[in-house]
Figure 1: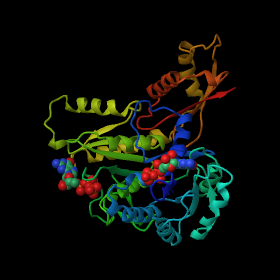
Figure 2: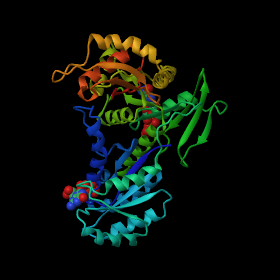
Figure 3: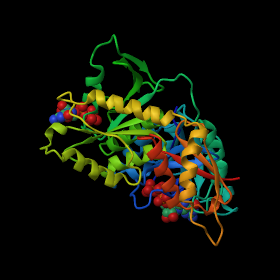
Figure 4: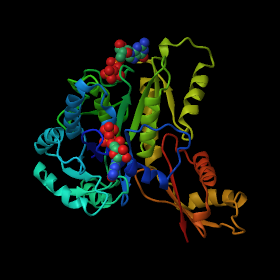
Length: 433
Ligand SMILES: Nc1nc2c(ncn2[C@@H]2O[C@H](COP(=O)(O)OP(=O)(O)OP(=O)(O)O)[C@@H](O)[C@H]2O)c(=O)[nH]1
Ligand SMILES: Nc1nc2c(ncn2[C@@H]2O[C@H](COP(=O)(O)OP(=O)(O)OP(=O)(O)O)[C@@H](O)[C@H]2O)c(=O)[nH]1
């Protein structure tokens, strides 16, 4: 299951403002991506301990007047298909426009939950103006002011009912998703892996009609593979191809345990790749980077090392990820890709016994304690790994609020040094004890 919220609506109703509010609130809590350019159209939101991906559809619409209404209509259709919940935003100051009516008509036919957010209800008087939006025929309306945040909590309370909490599922096969920009070699990789041999491959219909999950069981590896490659929607509006491909990628990413992010060796790592990488990281997914078309590179003995360094520079600070150099056409290191994904899955799901954790980390902490603040000494007493779907550690101490980002980073590095967590994002919490 995935947790995807799409905000749809015509331009200027305030979608981006709400998007920023939903995703920034999260940023304020864990701001660990200093200096990284983030994509403004999708990000992670959090409400009462549930995480979800928020998509601001507006950003994908071209400026040209003639495509834009068609583009918006099509985006609404794509959003209905791919997202789990839709927030339909309208503007109290303009009332219902023709385009609002059009969108409402599409949404009324959808089976996905739709929430009407009447925005710019900045004061109490405007609430009575909002009642006209009941005539859209989409049920309850939620009066909000994206600018001030008023009403957004009530809206979110309802929205997140549709989302799952992260939980451990027993005896479940690992799920890998191969993602990457168009033409990077995703289909070729999948074909190389599963070929056409139906004895080893069974296609299982996914949650939506056209999502393909492949059951792989060969060479000692068994897992589910999400195929995002072959799924190309015929969009009428050229501008929406990117929107659609981002939707598919986000969805695959939500459903997977480990993301195999393919990069073109010739083009190098691009901002889109970095966005996907950070989304995967924030979603606590395991990550393997595959540099494909390695055959096209003129190589010296230092090439892989230099390439690796260039990639890691751009992935800062989360650089403890495996990088595999493949040539799918020359069948090079394809199995190695699978092995890397399997190893990342193990790293992501393993649990370090509390005694071992404390035996190794407490002496290190003793040697390099968190810096004292205002003359107060911080004492870390013990550590446990909290059971979760990805590595999460609680450090119990007297003054958790005084522990700063650099020390957290230091702790994370020590964890990575002593226990292999390559490819798995780590969460660290300091708690009062
Ligand atoms: N008064 C008021 N203005 C708001 C509110 N939310 C957004 N706005 C303003 O409405 C305008 C449009 O907001 P955006 O968030 O850019 O709207 P959008 O729907 O994302 O627009 P597109 O990106 O063009 O699709 C901006 O000037 C916002 O400051 C609100 O709650 N109250
Ligand atoms: N030289 C070289 N070409 C490759 C390699 N892998 C794939 N290609 C070629 O790259 C092109 C695109 O490959 P696809 O597998 O269709 O790429 P894709 O990522 O599935 O593309 P979309 O379906 O558009 O997302 C094809 O012409 C492949 O033959 C490789 O390792 N080396």
